[in-house]
Image 1 (cartoon, rainbow, N blue to C red):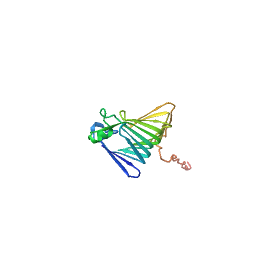
Image 2 (cartoon, rainbow, N blue to C red; image 1 turned 90 degrees about the horizontal axis):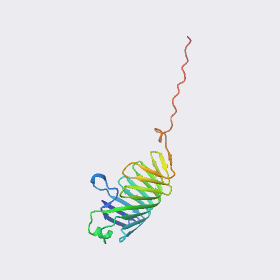
Image 3 (cartoon, helix red, strand yellow; image 1 turned 120 degrees about the vertical axis):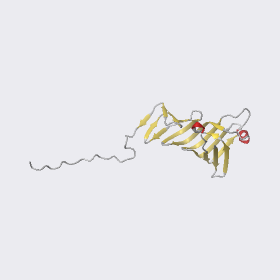
Image 4 (cartoon, rainbow, N blue to C red; image 1 turned 90 degrees about the vertical axis):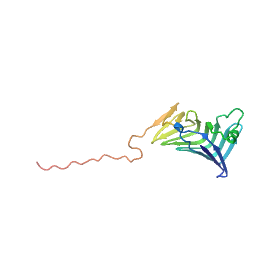
Length: 190
């Protein structure tokens, strides 16, 4: 898979080969991940990349927006760095964790999540949302102290004090229709 980083209105383009993020099931070909941000800082020794300002990540049908995004990679072979792996044309530089902070927005299919902070755990394919998290799906809302938002399955786990607001079925986005009432027909004399 290709990962494109774009910063400062397209001035800086940084390509990284084969970064694994939400890898498709059954070994299907990977899909590119594109990250746009105002600034980017790659820390070679620590195997980290930091994005600052208007971060926008797109990966197939997953969209993530935030003020900041820190990407932490699985440590390469002993003593090697992120750049060493890229120069050696390693097949994959795998993401271990991502931390998005500030006005976090995540959209996956028909689910949308909002939070102050989201931590992506690559091994489990989920985000842990904190700082007033809310998940909305088909007009239904859940909120709590901590929400685990799974990316491979249509599931969220709410922990701590929680609230759920459900829309009545069949009325999502439609005007409520009043049942038609027929007035009684006048009867003839008889």
